[in-house]
Length: 396
Ligand code: FES
Ligand SMILES: [Fe+2]
Image 1 (cartoon, helix red, strand yellow):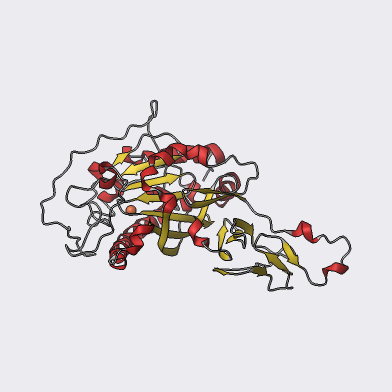
Image 2: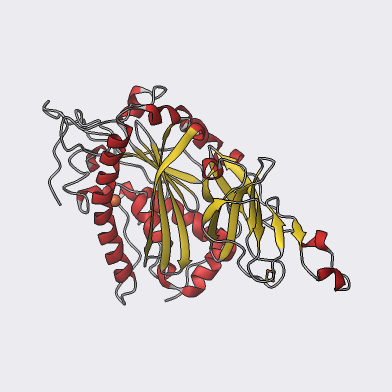
């Protein structure tokens, strides 16, 4: 990979190193999860039952279904769902399994006035009600009104659409109130999605989470790309308690740019978000809302990932870039997004390389629970949260 160059001819000044993150009082020998938590099919089933069917999981953004009739299909741990804006303008999430013989009603995304089953032509309104079921009037006891499409609970938080399969689940917002306040200056709820990237990988979903929530690996995996501009010595782990972790990655002075690093002085940039403080402008941050919602904030945008497990060692990832609406009107918007996108596609290769290697290593006989660096404290916090729900890790 080409050596990045900095935008500015100004010499970079190193900032003072950040103080080390502190482990909780009483923690001795902090370790990550045992390898079997990443490889065991039985443990994965437990995660589905105790986490993905009980906790709030993000499926996208409100602007994904901006107009009445817009719909997007998405599968969450084997549950085919459709997010749709009905004709009255209400955002809904339904199961997209026909109530007749369980045919998948719809795939992909688009705009529709109804969902028509391709098998025996039952028709559902976008509000989920069964509107037509040919020949079924001759079936004794058949009640059309009882055949609406079921669906999970839905909550919109900062423009993200979250679902929860547990009908008794408590609302999401109060649990992450501190985080919402912390992120307030980004006004994420008013942003719009402008780029998205889907890729399938052969990792356990937690390999993705672990990789995302620490910047210790700038020293190794991103030695030539991110480390020169967001060095490990400046990384700070935020002390804000909640079902989330936050890691800050301040820039070396003189490298505050649209993306991670620039490739020339003439590069286009998106404007910084005007409501950010000086400190917020200077440091990208990595945010993990448990269990699987990943966001990163930059001076000019926000990015998020959907982490969609397809089994213990299969994962679909969707990365989405979001910007304030006003940025769309910039004449150099397309060029600026190309800079950001090109940078992302370059350093993504580095993360894919280490995550592939880790997943292979975790299956090895000699794999063991990792000793964690202070910069990996988010891994410890997440693993404790996870095991409180799943119960103890499996024996090998
Ligand atoms: S399975 Fe949908 S109409 Fe028969
Ligand atoms: Fe990385």
